[in-house]
Image (tube, rainbow, N blue to C red; front, side, top):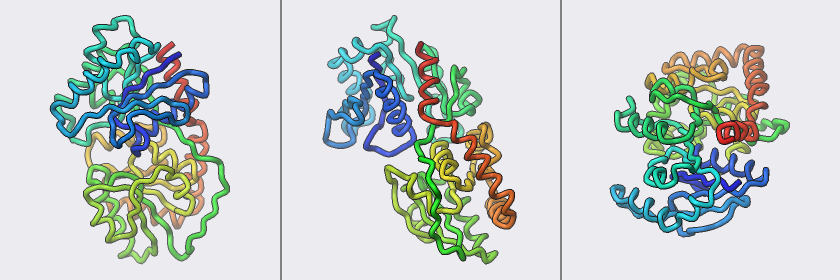
Length: 338
């Protein structure tokens, strides 16, 4: 098959959607299919191949209001991609394809709904766009069960992503007089940064010795730097997890990668949607979700003292995540398409 993916951002840009599309594309190529990715141009290269994936980038400029027209014009000029594709699959951006949906009525077109707009509560416009995308697509995959509740989406399949971590012998070289904590993700309030930092203050007051580092970026970078080193986003975070004892992460892929490295994970929420994002999952009990810095700090201390519970949480989450491969994620796409 020829499979055309439409996605706002893609390699080399780093993010959850970008990784999801890359990993399922690699699996599809390995299965003998042709994968074409059309995305926005965030650099200078308009076409390249990566992992045998054909990547085309649309120059849209900085004018947000005219962006959709530039995308539609590009797709019109390159309509051969739409015509040749056996499957068209949009990752959130179904509006890119919407005008062509009526030109190619019999062309199978699907959508994956990733995440939410970081605005709480979701706007009526956001809900309307998702319902429109659901209605005019042939089927959908939702990344997380919470999407059905908060956007009214009837999910055909639900996924939480996969992991590429290898089964490595963990070599923890930390100074064992201190625990090492890593934060993964955007350095923003909606990602729980204030709660995590307040918990660090509490740990410090209770004489818990720790080292803290963050892999990510955002508007709260300067604040986070007061607690430890900020490395920014990196493409392969998996290797950086090995030396950590505890991971702070509030996004699915970061959580799964941490489980795969046999790390204790803590996740926080600051609104009811994010709470459902974390709690309405098969791994909720292993991430200790809370919106309380005090509860977070006390849970960390309790698990550090209770080695049996600490190890059980790690082993149970690892046993679950071993089955969450990208190959299994692709099976959901095949079920949707075929």
